[in-house]
Amino acid sequence: LGLLRRERRQLHAELAEDMAMCLEGLRSRCWPAAGACIEVAAGDLWLLRHLFRLTDISAITCVEYSENRLLKLGPETISRDNLPAERITLALGSYYDIQTEPESADFAVLCQALHHADDPVAVLMQVKRALKPGGSIIVMGEHVANWSLWNDLLHPFFLLASRLFPGSLLSYCPAGRPRGLVANSQDLFPKDPVLGDHTYFRRDYRAMFRQAGLKLSFLRRAESPWLSIIGLKPVSPTP
Image 1: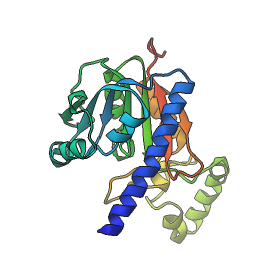
Image 2: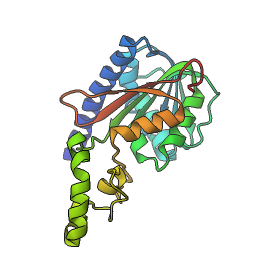
Image 3: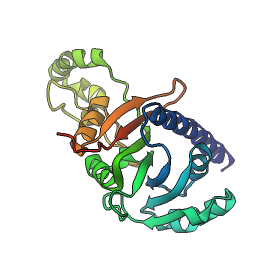
Image 4: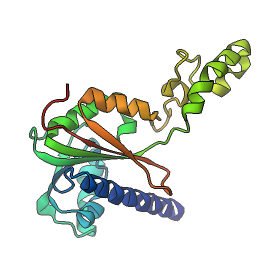
């Protein structure tokens, strides 16, 4: 139990550093990094103390589907971390149906959340709905796909080899037979059967954000095992 707690503290410390990097990335682009915030899939609210420490939060709505995490552990976290309860709203619900006022948030945070969604575009659309025009989004704690342009170029050859030697197929493509000559992240990095995590290529995230009508930039600290993304809801709809 003690080891698990130390690992959890280390994980949170790494993600807090990623949060600081993301907020600085927003500020450097003159994108909103303070004001009214919405945290989606907020868990037991462990991230709040870092948010209140790193930026000016006028109000924050914490959305979480687990009643135990949000309504039992959440208030304990607020009390333990001496957080301003009057500025925190707890919203029990799914990230597929975020029950907040439209265009009410200056910025949104998803920490280790988007890669759990089976329909990430639907989640991003819900977040976009909650953001004011010109509002920003931070997506942190996403898995890093060990994949490059060279892998894309070599993929057709490995695909051909796996078909000539069927026994090698699963070692190259754990999800089964690849869908085509263009590598698909969900073939090569299948969904975790226990945690439900997805691993995506950067081009997948670009497509998700484009479909949701959001701009994006990738960020990653050299020491971080995670990928971070910052995005912007345009003031006027993207074409």
